[in-house]
Image (cartoon, rainbow, N blue to C red; front, side, top):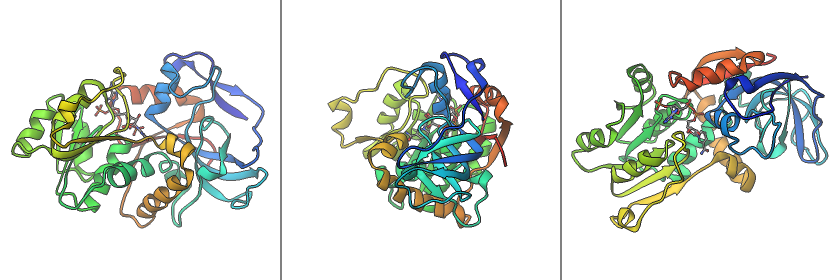
Length: 324
Ligand SMILES: NC(=O)c1ccc[n+]([C@@H]2O[C@H](COP(=O)([O-])OP(=O)(O)OC[C@H]3O[C@@H](n4cnc5c(N)ncnc54)[C@H](OP(=O)(O)O)[C@@H]3O)[C@@H](O)[C@H]2O)c1
């Protein structure tokens, strides 16, 4: 089979196409003939600096859609040929991928393999950020960094569906603001003055819930942009800054900070992840939420997909087309 291999950390050029033996599933696993692989910001971090990579060489790719090729011992819920979407801990940029059966999901009715590849990371993440972790209540105001990207595009729609009073996004360009405004956001702040923008938009109150994927100084300023009993959920560190810290003085106005990682939940509480994914996927199946695919590349051009995402001009979801 063909698969993308990384032998040293570096720029997109280290993503090389290799010919490898197709993997077999171990106990509790399935193998999948991959149709599409989603492209995630976390894969850029893995390629560039080894984020969540155990050792080199490694096979990148955290989510796929396709058809079950074979099932390992102890797997009763899937059969060869069945169409699925899956979280893979690695190796999704390949013609054949292996995933633990507990993070494989039967395709919801009416959802194509192409759409299915956009679901496994973003949909449960967006749902958990707002609901299971962020405890969104109708009438809340919400602030979302990276509002036009994969996660941001879904969060805006979910927040609107849940009755948030005001949904504010932060993006790096006017073109991205236009995309976010079509994805549920009431107002989108462009550039780096988001804390002042929040102050003016909320009449000095601050927001009830903020979702931060940037970290560093953005995390610190977002904490200060919360209302007195506001909640901040940290879910990424796109800035590459040192790990954040929150002081008592920052929290004593009654603010709280939580965190979320879909990859951690997949390892520690896969049943909880399945429950969240079922709730989130149902909203795609019934048409309440859409995650547009804005760029698609063949497997051999995975480096071009990474280059494009690194330009910070992309909106929605990027895919690798492998076999559909
Ligand atoms: N914790 C979880 O479970 C989880 C799951 C999925 C994704 N994530 C995180 O959520 C974020 C979005 O992921 P995605 O895969 O959907 O990607 P994406 O949003 O489609 O693309 C990357 C995003 O990062 C922002 N960005 C890029 N470089 C940046 C930088 N140097 N500083 C600040 N922001 C930068 C861009 O927004 P602007 O250009 O508009 O600033 C863009 O929205 C990433 O940080 C990712 O690691 C976390």
